[in-house]
Amino acid sequence: MRRFFKNPKNLAILFLTLFGAGFLFFHFRKTAPASPPFITRTIHLGTLHRTVTATGRLKALKTVHVGTQVSGIITRINVDFNSRVRDGEILAQIDPAIYRAQVSQAESNLAKMETKISLDRIQMTRDKDLLDHHIIARSTFDTDQAQLLMDLATRKQLEAALKLAKTDLSYTTIRSPIDGVVIARKVQIGQTVTSAFKTPRLFTIAHDLREMRLDTRVSEADIGAVAPGQAVSFRVPAYPDRIFHGSVTVVRDHPRTVSHVVTYDVLSTVPNPDKLLKPGMTAMVTIHTGVVPNALLVPNGAFVYRPPRKFLPDQSLVRKKNTNFVFLLKESAGQWRVVPVPVKIGPTDGLLSMVTGNLSEGERVIVRDRGARGHAGQGLFP
Image 1 (cartoon, rainbow, N blue to C red):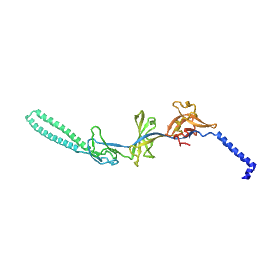
Image 2: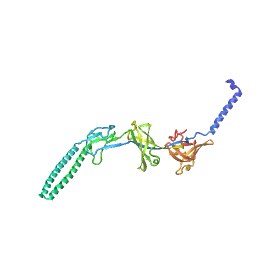
Image 3: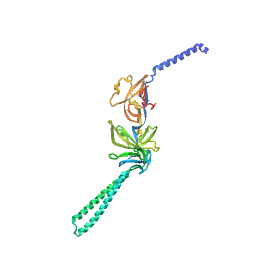
Image 4: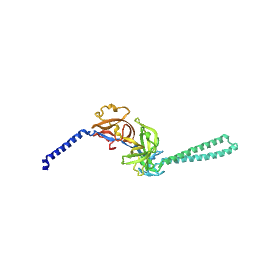
């Protein structure tokens, strides 16, 4: 090593080498542009899966609310939550004592009227013989005939009263109208139910939870793209890592208006073979409305970004009404430039949107300032 440093020629070579390295370092450090203060994403040409997003609620495909048409005290309940029931199975019993008494009273009234009709017939037969022998006046026989007709009409009325009393008695036994599962029970033994003005709801029975209905409210801006037969995917908070699937069955024409926001109901059928989904669950719904091939795709975050004034002094360029802008990052003469480009936004999948305008695949679009918090377009493209 000492011999190397004692040689003047070696020292000269070492000096020139260090000098050249330093020169190159400072030269490129001076001419290379600094790292841009923006987060960008590459404009990409690909296939866009068009979607409509909304929130929905799961319901049983067929739900029946079981009530009562008579009033009384609940004396027996045979089912509870999650009980499986068959069509015609007894769910509960209302105290039938009063209604049995009404049936007995109606039967007694009808029996008395049957006896009276028999007497009327006998009286008519006797008076007919007397009339044939000119012993009584014709008006007497006519009165007997009228009395029989009136009693026959009264018998029909009493028969109807007996049928009504028997029907009310049968209503004291609450039966299931369908096969299904009890998902709600709102009565207790000893509770008095009344049906004077409104039929009380005692039980709610879901027909079959192996297939469910998803009710989704879609905004008027998106409803035009939704049609029966389209695929539906959704998540529920109970299973955040699992995606469930279904298909649109009905798009209702009736609008719902809440706080001046108009929505339409979209009903979907959802298979639920393992019964993980339950009625009432909230769903984050994605309706797959179509596919757009060879679309120029831009992250949605690029449409809301606006650069600082120092990068775009003339802010009036991007304040045109009804015009959307994206901002490209370009390098020229060792400097970064922000270039606004007007675009027309097309369909979206919630993360990316198809655009048309003076853009090319591979250009880099700004989605946010470097160091700013947010996830606009993050991770979509390199």
